[in-house]
Amino acid sequence: MKKTLILMLAVLLALTFSIIAFAEDDIEVISGDANVRTWVCWVQDGNEITVNQVTTNDSYIVKDLSSNWIIKQQDLQSKITDTYWSPATVWTVNASQVFELAFEVFGGTKVEIGFLHSIGASSTGGVNLPCSADGHELVQWCKLYESEDGTTWTEVDSDILPAADALVSGMTGYENTDIHPYNGNGETEYSEAYFVISGTVSNDAKYVKYSFAGNGRNHYWDPCVRDAIFTAPVGNSWEPAEESDTSDESSTPVEYNPWINAALDCSYEVISGTVRSDGYGDPDYTKLTDGIWSDTGSNAIGALDSPTGSVAVDFGAEKSIKKITADLWYGAWGVTEPENISFYCSVNGTDYTMIGTAIKDDAEVLSTGEFSGYLFSLTLDEPISMRYLRVDYNGTSHIWTSEIGAYEYVPENTEESETESAVESSTASAESSESGTPITGDAGIAALAIISVIALAGVVVIKRK
Image (cartoon, rainbow, N blue to C red; front, side):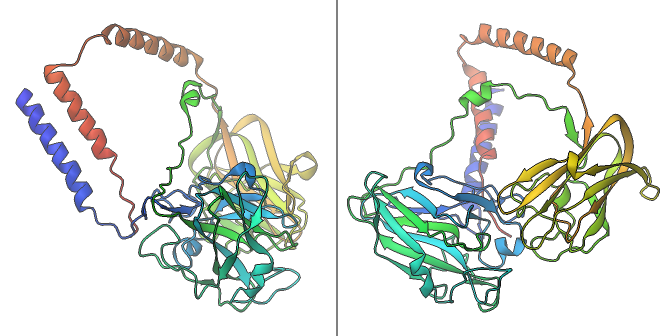
């Protein structure tokens, strides 16, 4: 038995180190020297090349010294993989206020912060303040400031490098990933370019702040901060990002939610209405059931370029639905206030029966500033068995929506919970009585084998195919 366990352990260790040594990455995450910190506003976990799978990252941002910012994942595949490798960007929230992002630095650090800005022609309905492709207008809006105490700030002598001259490899935090300098052709409306503001702080500086003046611009297009490189004088070493303390959270029981969304990740079709083909449309028919509700009216949107529209969701099997919800937004970009939403059910996808109409007077009001909206809901007296749910939108200009929810009500099984609690209590008592027994002999070798398995499972290779 002991020889078998030893052999197993040796094989597992060899396999683990083989995977680590021979894994070939198409894209390698940059770690850099100890004095160089590369920052991006998304988590480099291998999911950042997939729409709706990107995790944002606010590590290193000094939140108490920053203002008017929010990190958003991209909602268009080409912006993640084909144009300028931007899984997420930091947006401004209010276009009339200054946009500020602060970071802690060593004295004498060279700071390079990459951001996107609109270029090309403008119109009253589009980008308010674009700039030229060389970015010469940006110096009046975009600045770097430094501070010793976080209270008194002094402007840093800085340069803004245009797309053609900015760093085009490595600023994203990845090797072998060039940044396409433009989204669009660089001349017409809605084109964007990548710029880098660069400067070196004084030897006494402790903080640096990126600042973009509030000038009434359209904040959905510019400026969006994407990444940065902080190069401290040699001899300094950056500390890793602090992990969130979840010890208290792990001991807190999660409250049971009896509402189960049967529409989550279900397929659907647009029966009527004109599907938009840009980033605010949903040509792949995924956005309305991905579980992501818009919180601004401009993110996670799957819009129709028509005042009315109809969508049919297929649950894949009959579900007992108790509550139905859907949202509609309005107030910006020519989208006018909607009227109502009607819901229909079917078991065969052909013959539909009306469930009811949710009106805006009864809807939950959503408001984020530029956009407003309604969360339309119907809670039924008794559940209805259906396989298909049809949602008929009644707007006035566009159908600006992000999600459909169809919920089963499944109350918690308290008897089962009590039984599980009793079993856990008995198990804990048994483990407690055995805790004083040292691990020796075969048991110790088995434990090492298990640890090797865990180590093997923990090998993560970020690979882009």
